[in-house]
Image (cartoon, rainbow, N blue to C red; front, side, top):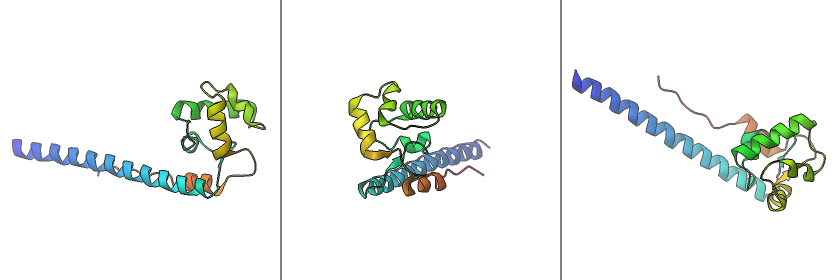
Length: 126
């Protein structure tokens, strides 16, 4: 009985490790696809992207991305990049990065739409 319990616990640990590796690989692939798309000139639409997509802009982490989405929702979208200076932690240096990798124009970019349509998938234990 003890051997059976240890075997079940070991199986759970292996599954959790597998899930972690799987999520890491999916995130890495998404980052590579994002870098490739951005290198080709595709930009993240700041008026459409969710917080997850915004984090692919250098200098934007989870907290800043959430603050950007919140400010966008409060103001009904961004008309000028300088409005992002109202987000805590965004100064001229990060604003330059946002201008390089983000856009305020048009609808959802191909890159943004691809990230929305194909978010990283996770598996659950049966």
